[in-house]
Image 1 (cartoon, rainbow, N blue to C red):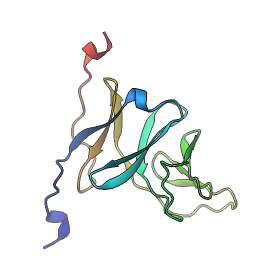
Image 2 (cartoon, rainbow, N blue to C red):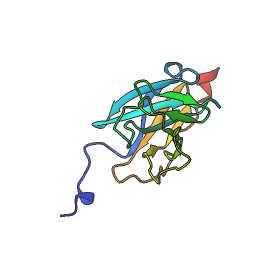
Image 3 (cartoon, rainbow, N blue to C red):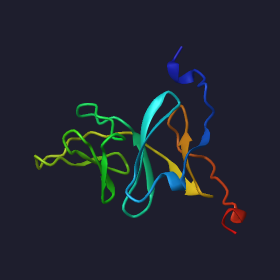
Amino acid sequence: MNSSHLLSPFPNSWFRIATSDELPAKGVLPLRYFGQDFVLFRAEDGTPHLLDAHCPHLGAHLGYGGTVEGETIRCPFHGWQWNCQGDCVKIPYTDKSPQTQIKSWPVRELNGLIFMYYHHQAQEPDWEIPQVPECYS
C-alpha cells in the first residue's frame, strides 16, 4: 500500500503554535509539533513565517542561534539565508545559490494568536480562520 494513503494521527487543520506576544519583532522561536521540528520567525516587516527547522547544508537548527535579516532567517553555522518561502537566497562566501529549499508552512496571525496549517499530504489550506472582532474590543 502506498504510504501517502495512510491516515495521519493528526487532523488536517489550523493549529495554534504561539501567541503573538511570544514572537517579538525579528524574533526566532524553535517549535516542535506533529513529531517535527520547526522554526517560527518574524520578518522585519512584522509577518510571521514558519519553516522546517533544519538547514539542509549541515543540519543546524535555525531556531537556536538563527537570526532575522530583513525578510530572511540566517543559519547560525555558515550564514546561509532562507526567505519566507524556504528558498536559499544568499550564501555569504560565494555568489552561487544552490537550488535547495526548506519546506515552508502556511501561517496566519489573528486574534492575538499565530496558527499554522498542517496537512499530512502538504496540501494548501481549504478554509480560513475567522476574525473575531471581540478579541480587539
